[in-house]
Image (cartoon, rainbow, N blue to C red; front, top):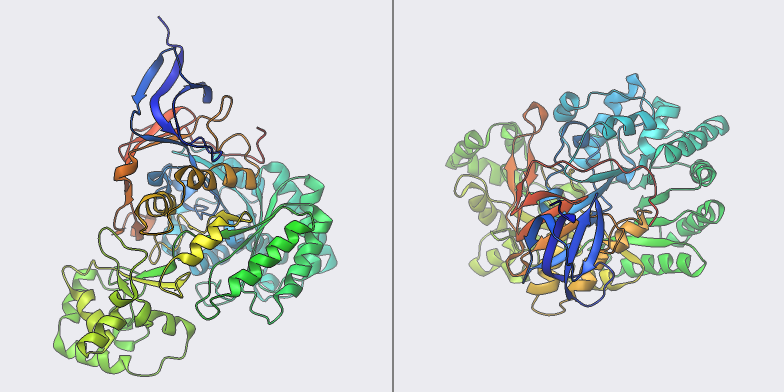
Length: 573
């Protein structure tokens, strides 16, 4: 007798993505869609007993950088370990299409510099079987995956495609070039781009230290691109900026003109700067002003500190600016460790570390009062007194001595967590306030990027476990947290066919042992093309992850199923 359904998840505590209270329910799936929710009488070809477990829609991560990895890898890890069933890439204005043959290396250098993805891995991994953005989508579509994937048109690649070296030199686009960008933008949206992204931050530089090509793009250029989206009648705009001027209102006034002309939805990255701890409230107020004027505007925020992991395996240590360390930086960890255990080398490095360092990066790498042993399980809300600076003060030593000892302990695999945003008061109250705003989205995890420094693709797991269960005070409702990382994100990028557990919706689900849910400590692996390294961070507590009705991961291990597909453009409910 034929089964009624392909898969039935039985008796779970359902958080359906709408924010409604948890309820016990069965979820039946057939032909990649949800066929029934509630008390399901029929039988499934496969059934999962979810009694006592949390059942959620698959998580929708709107801020990743799998642009290169997705062309050679069918498993978008680490995100797929953390319940993500749809990832959106092409963020921050960087990516690999459109591209001319002579500009390929320029885009690799931009991605390596902005997103810390090894250039050698990109050189070997990228096959460059495309020129236009539509051809890039075709290449992505040819590979099955463990999750669905959507792509956005990056300003850096678009500008270089149209202007060549003049784009890299930050020259102004001509009227003809703006018209070409407008046409190419419309073409990309019609081919299936979910949106357009741009960056105006000095933090985004190529591996050679040059600014991102879109840094000083004129309003006329941005307007042309926005009108290209209007021509196509689709796509969201993502905007990243330092907002360093005394008058960020002027930049938001420009944004309003772009939105007035295009009518497109918009998001901007938002975090707490330690130098201006309350400045984010001013920027969020400007987003709220756009909403009040009738625009769909959101700020993308993070659920924990934004920071880097430093260590002998990582891309940086607090000694990376010292000549003695630079000389051994590229050596294997075991060899580096042996050198650092030599008292003579230690004395030399300590002497060099006393010299004044005058760059923002140096200051960030040596902010000992905001440097913590990451630990296992990792602690992303550590108390101030546990910092290396505080410990050193108690012991009457210089912090760099403690840091040095920590780095060479064991096998050199220790990581230091160094938050540089969202942690001015040594707690995450600002993140709570940001997340609770109706004008924000949970994002900025950067899955697939900053692979030698950051491991924030674990945000979905942390969001639920820390804010929904573990935080001593200020815990947030689990059903509401699920909504924030499912339906809210899906709708923000036009994916109205997912993000909720309802009849007719896409059959993307997670089955979670909520009591056991947690992020594991990150580890460094050398498994990228050309032996490139990347930080990977797994999770515990995911009993099953389901994409289009197929179980892709069971108890954290891949099943072999690859039902994930490219998502072209907005999806109807």
